Length: 121
Length: 111
Image (cartoon, rainbow over all chains, first blue to last red; front, top):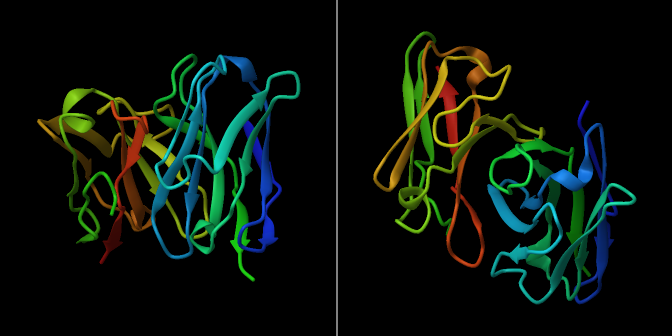
């Protein structure tokens, strides 16, 4: 069955970096687009970034553009989110999500359990 | 401020029907048939309930239905049940540089 497992979260000081990983299994990884979505404590979902199935295109929310970088390693069935220059407002649970259908990015059909990132001094 | 506008809360009694709205612009909701709806229970990951405006993934109850008119999409839940109490979020493909936008979420209370 489809499984997405995030890792890499933790407590980090403002201005520092962190890299999140999302290990996928149960499907053909290279056929799907992937998103990162975050949720600050007690708040709603905020879309962060997406990478197309072929890795050729990536998009970012304005709030993270220039600081975060999404990438994928199809040989390892893993999605990444490199987060630099972290700010307290980046504190959230970060979810990895797979597109519902192949070769498109819309409709987040499967979600991981999330990993908590806390940015605090 | 979220890109898509949802009511903060709705409520209904068991057996009743409720509708949650999701208002965007012609650059997202109004311009494409790519609206999705997600259900999130406390402490859990979101679950896809509706995709492409009105399609249900396998395993989602037919009590959940979606529609769209102009720049506003809607999620209707009929025959409300206690387990439907959750937060609901809409999202849409967007022609802006961000590609995907979410609504602020609606808390559904089953009275």
